[in-house]
Length: 635
Image 1 (spheres, rainbow, N blue to C red):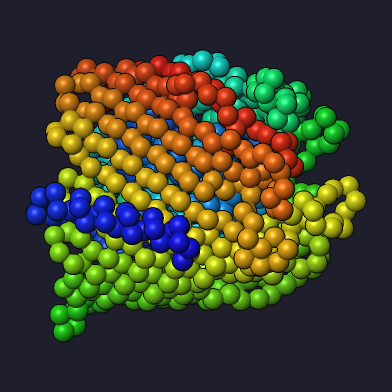
Image 2: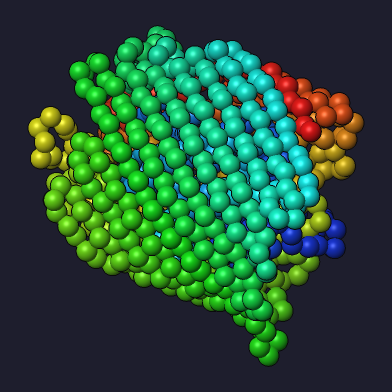
C-alpha cells in the first residue's frame, strides 16, 4: 500500500471513530432488499460495497434515464460515448477506456452487457419501470462471470401487486429542443399482474448534428404459483442519433458545439425477452431466467463513404438454487447455479462467444460474524474470422465481516476475477489475446445507525494481461493505426468513502469520494498513469422534503484531471482539465399532480470528460446548461 493511500485510510478511519461517538446508541442495519447473492435478501455486512438507488430517489434527482440517475446518485463517473446516445460510459474503480468492459450490467438478473465494445443500453429501460438499482463495486466474477472486475450494476424492474392499479403520465420540455413523453400503468388481480411503461424522448442535441431520438417500451406479465411466481418481460427500444465527431483542443476552445462530421448518423434497435420463475419449497429457493436479446446497430458515415451494419443476439439460461439451514447456532446459506450463454455478432466480421459456467457460494453467519466462500468455473468457446478457441477460467472469493459494537463493523474481501476479449477486440488484435485476470483485495469499515450509514474502504486490483487498445502497437491492417493488446501488469489501488445521513425531518445528505492510483506496474510504461482515469472524484447531494408538497434536490460532482486516451507514455504536456457540475430539481405537488423544474450543468461549464485521441485531440464535449420543465399526474 502506497504512503499516500495509507495516510488517507488512517485519516478517514479516525473520522469514522469520531463520527460514531457523536451518534445515537440505537443502531440498525438498513432493511433494503438486494440481490447481491442472486436471490433477494436484506442488506448485510457482506454487501457493504452495494449502493441501492430507489425509484423515489431516481424521480427526486430529476434524471431523464437510469444511466443519468446512477451518475448523479451513486457518484459514478460517466463519460460521453461515441454513438450520440445518452448512455454515458460508466466507470467503477478507474478502468478508463475499458470501463464498460470491466463491469457487468444486468436487468432482472439478465446480462445487458454486450459481447462487443458497445455500451450497455441502460437508457433503453424506461425509467418509470425501475424499482431500484443496485451498484456493487469490486470483483464479482464468482456470481457474475466475465467482465465483473470493476463491479456490477443491476436494474430491478417493478412487478406490481395483486389487486392494485397505479400509473402515471407526464410531459417534459427543455432547451436544445428537448421533448419527452412518458407513461406507465400497472394492474393486477389474484390471478396475474401486468405492467407497461413507455417513453419517447427527442432532442436537437447540444452539438450540431447531435440530435437524438429514443423510443422505449417495456411490458411485464406476472402470475403467482404455489410458493412463488412466474413472469415474462419484454423490452423494445429504438434510438437514432447524429454522430458529430471528435474535436481538437483548439476546435473545442473556439466552439465546443461545432461538428466535424455534419452528416454522420447512427441507429440502434434492441429487443429483449425474458422469462423467469421463482419458487420456494421448505428451506430451498429455486429460480431461473431464460432470455433472448437482439440488437441491430447501423452507422452511416458519409464523411468516409462508409456504412456499417452489425447484428447481434444473445441467449442466456441461468437456473440457480439457495438452501438455508441452521446448524449448532450457525446460519448456513448455500447458493449454486449455472450460467449458459450463446452469443453471436455479424457485420464487418462474424464472431460468436459461447460460455457455460458453474458457481457455488457458501455463507456462514453466527452472532456478529459472517463468512462467505465462493468459486466459479467458466468454459468459453470463441470463434472469430474462422478461428476457434476453447479455454476455461476460474474465479474465487473469500469474504469476512465482523460487527464490533454500536453499529460499527469491519469487513475484508479477497478473490480473483476475469474477463475475455470481446469480438471487436479480437478482430482488432495482432495474434491471440490472452484472458485478463485480476487479484482483488478490499478492506473496509462501515457504520450503520437509525438515521444514516457511513462506509470507508481500501481496494486493490492487480491485473495481468489487461486488454486495452494501444494506439502505438503494430497492426495487421494498414488502414488503421494501433491494435488491441495485452498490457504488461497493471494496478488500480485506492480508497472509497460513502455517507448517507438524515438531518432532522426534512433534509438528507449523501456524499461519495474515490481516490484511485491507476498505474502500469511493469513493461516500458512502468510507473506511468493509465489514461482516461481521474485519480480523484467527489459527489454530494442534498435533498429537502418538508412534506407540504414542496421538494428539492441539488447535487455537485467533481472529477480530477485525466490523461488523454492515447497518452500511455505520459508525454503529453497537458491533461484533460478537472471539471465540476451542479444540478438541481425543484418540484411542487398538489394532490396527484406534480410540476418540476430541472437543471443540469447549471453553471454552463464548457468541459469534456472524454478524449480518446492523442495529445489534445479526440475530444467529445459534454453538454452545456440543460433546463427542463416537467408535468406529471399519478393515478
